[in-house]
Every structure is written in C-alpha cells, then in structure tokens.
Image 1 (cartoon, rainbow, N blue to C red):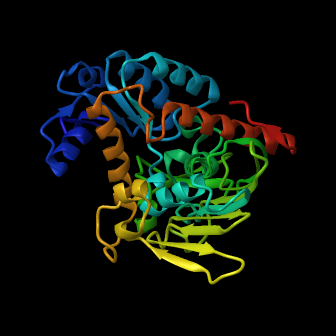
Image 2 (cartoon, rainbow, N blue to C red):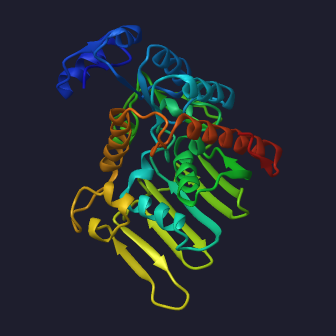
Image 3 (cartoon, rainbow, N blue to C red):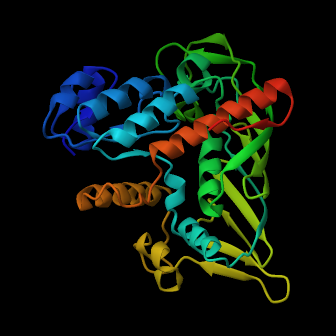
Length: 355
C-alpha cells in the first residue's frame, strides 16, 4: 500500500499513522500524479465517484470503486463506456459475491443442478438507523442519492442474485418507506455506525426523504420471479443477507449470519447442509476458500477474495479475458435498476429496467 488520502490532510495523517502507511496525500491530483500508485481504491461518498473514477482512468490507474458506482444511470453509463476503452481494469466493490458458498451456489446453478429457476426470495436487513439519533451522510439525498437503503445495501443483494442465477432483472415493482422522517444530526462529522456507541452529542433536526425500507418484486429476463426486502431499521439484525433459490430440481439457501453453511433442498430425498470445506466445493469456489473445513471465513475474507481476484487479473495482464469480479458494467446495471425502483415507487406500477 503506497499511500492514503482522507477528507482532510489531518485525517489522512492520522489514518496513515494508525495503519502504518508511509504516505498521506493532501490532494487527489497529488495521488494520481504519483507513479508508484497503480490501483486506486475509491471509498468516498457516492456523489464523488463519477469525477474521481474519470480522473483515475484518465491518469492510467486501475480503479476499484465502492458501490453505487455513481449517482444516476447517465453517470454510470458514461463510466462504463470510458472503462470499455481505457487500458485499465475497473471494478465495483460488490464483495458479497466472494463468500465461498456464494461462489459454490453460482457454480451449481450454472451447471444445471437446480434445473430451471422458478423464483428467488430474500432480504438484506440491518438496524443501525433504527433510532432518530442515528445519522450518517448516507441518509442525505444530496450526498448519497435519492435512493438510500435499496441503493446502499439492496444493490448488494441484487448484484449477488443476478450473478448467482445468471439472469438480469428486466422489470421491477417497488414500495419504499421513510419510517424516520426527521433525524437528529450531530454537530460535526459522524462515521458510519458511530451513533450506535451511544455517545451523547449536540444535535440538530434534519428532514429525511430517503428510504429506510423497501419491498421489491422482480421479473428476470429468463421468466423467473423474485422478491426482496431491504431495511436499515430492523432491530437486532446487524448485517443480515439472506436468499433462497427455487428450481425445478432442487433449491438452495444461504444466510450471511451463518456464512459457512448452505442449505440444499430436495423433494424426494433428505435435504443437505453443506459446510464450507475446500475439499467439498466446486473448483471455482475452492479457489476462494483459503481455510480448511471448520475454520470459518467471514465478512473481511470476502473483501480479501474480491481484491485478490482483481489483482490476479491485473497481474496476468490479459484485458480480453473474462473478468471474474464485478465490473463497471455491473455497477451501471445496479444503478439503472435503482432508478427503476425509485420510478416504480413514485408511479406505483411495474416498470422496465433501462440498462
């Protein structure tokens, strides 16, 4: 790791000292001008992604951008087009794909083990914005976009499911709700999840228009159906991603709170519970399972495996090879889907996804 850039030089120095990083940049152009930097990881607020991605690609840097890729489909379409022409690797940080058992699920479905996919159900629920004193830049439309819970965490589920079943969503019908219409904003900056620590701070009331909750009905291009619930106000659920895929031959289910188990359902014989063990996984899934069976892998490992896939691809240097990670095209697809979700909610009807 060559260096780090924060929102201020002071915060950058603090982070560099805390993480043992040799350099703290003062400005983004200074970072991009450094020949020692080959890959830029963008973890800035959503509204900054568009310009920062363009500048990084123009500087000849590989880019790994946090999701959502940008604020609207026009921006993501432009980034996707630039990425197709730029001699660099670009990726979006949909890390949930890289739990080993999610790779296993994708491989089994691709091999036809579930048969024709009938429907997919699931959810992504959290509780970190349950109270009116819970606050973060993500709740503000001008910082994160008009869609929040669905765009922030729902896109993880949508990307994961589209990739696992190998089918894009073509139509959506959505209902959204803002259940905390006024939040108490602390005076000064607040890091994500910091409000859960219960630290008393001076606050001011701020009206909120972004969604705390969303319910989505989905139609996939294959004719399969789906439904998803997204919430950041579900007490007790800290970070729970769940899905169940039903097919003509079998079904399977996975829960991120038990990430080393995958349930496999059968009609005419006993069900199975697959425990993550490299010796029992498909070849591609085994590649992303570093520890022996019984030695659990979890959330931090999913980032490690995503970055590993990207860096191995960069090292190989063959830009025409299939990219085994979420690309800017995937990032554009999810933002286009979010746009359809927001329009569907406002118009109270099914809408096509304009990808």
